[in-house]
Image 1 (tube, rainbow, N blue to C red):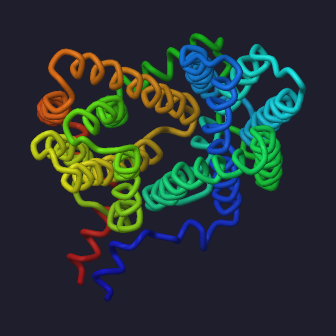
Image 2 (tube, helix red, strand yellow):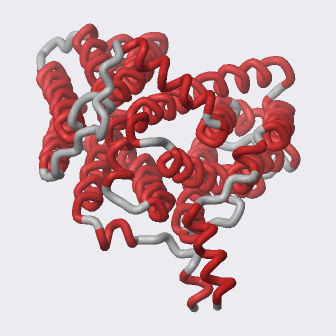
Length: 421
């Protein structure tokens, strides 16, 4: 039993830190609210316009605003007290959601209001998530960064699966306006939870101009072989998430699957990710954690190869679940490396770079996967996409020696304790 407990998700951050509990609750409620929007906005825009282009434009507006918000949020988090930064950002998002609710209940809702609120929501979300990431290392010891990452990840995975489904039921029973009201309430609760934290100012106030400050964050990351290497591998790992643009064609043309089976396949990565999160207790003291970062991303790539290699629904589900398993372990380990190795004065800006590599990597991955799929077909695209990921990751593993040989201080202490016994 003792051996098995090493693999169970580590709940220590929730047990030992009151402040982390507030953050965890705030983040969970926030994810629930955002999941409701994930369904409400596309449905309302399409109902108003009957245009997929308009729906896509709404997504682009939010995505580009999040990107800008993460970069400038990093600057703000390294310059001002992070507690009011997060609270004000979530309050601003709540106001935007309230406006969306009012607009939805009008006899003739306005499309420009939805786009404007998308800008506010994206900027606020980018700022708050970046500042939140910068806060956590101040609340927990370094050897609990992986545990914190796992706890945040498992709630994100559960929320992104359950909340949209609940949102769809609410819309069917009432209207999209109800979703917006609940999202506004969730933002208010989130802001209240964050306000219960102590003051969290940066130790050294950054006084550079915003653009120069953003540049210095990128410069620091590029010069640090461990932090920079972790972000680069993270970008490649996020590119691997582009597979989702291939699945509709693969399910229809290759598997001849209907909507129900296709929906099940879309849930497979979440099943794998949840399994990975719940068995992530070992990540906090993983020996050669840097090498495991590469191996986790390779597992995610291998899962995609399995999808293309054996065109069966059951195998596709397992392959996508393996992809989700590898992805989440890589996310947890990279999160721990970034949070442990980044100096306090750079945490906000490096968190901004982290957020930027997530959004740009996902977009680039979708573009590459879509182009390959259009050129060779969905099955071959899965094979090439997964194999290409393994090749690129192998090259990076050989090149990025600093990350490949990295081992956390917690892992080294664990080794010393084992040797002493």
